[in-house]
Amino acid sequence: MDEYHRALGDFVQMFSQVETALADALQATAKLAPDVGNALLSGARNVETAIGLMGRVLDVKHIQGIKRDIIRYVIGQLSVINGTRNSILHHGYIIKRGRFVVSNRQAVHLTSRIRTIVVSSAILDDMTDDLSRILGILTIHCVSYTFVSRSWKRIYQQELGQPWRYKSPQQVPPVRRTRKTPLGRQHQPRPSPL
Image (cartoon, rainbow, N blue to C red; front, side, top):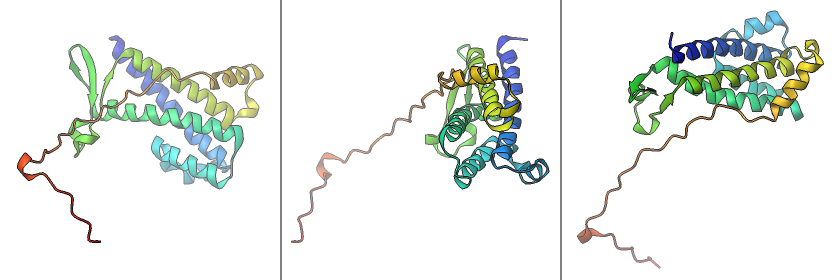
């Protein structure tokens, strides 16, 4: 198996673990009993849905301070990774000049929405590393904080100050062509009616 596909497999595996932890964190943050949480949140296995619901729970439960900051920190990066994940898994890749290129070109109706990303095993490894951190942080701060050893808590407290490894590529907007008014038909300012 080549390096890209090994990294892709690791990434997909870690992402599925984070999806489960996010649903558990949502249930714990909302303070739902496990059976009630499973019944109500069964549709929240989708990351976008779970992130949206988590934001609502933070607002309704009036969660403030460090716990809110931690959750926002984590779901911000998870949203970035999820966008890239969706492009990789739903649109596939082409090999262009020896690089794996992912694009949603076939699925969008406006050229302004086209997203093209070059993906490598290093990028997948960076996202997997960030997902591993997200998994640990969600587990410690939202799900089972009381059951985690002090040394693990200390490690993940230090992790909060570290930058994420994966950075979403900046999308360059398409060049817009402007129509130039022919020289003979330049618009003259209208005189004021007053």
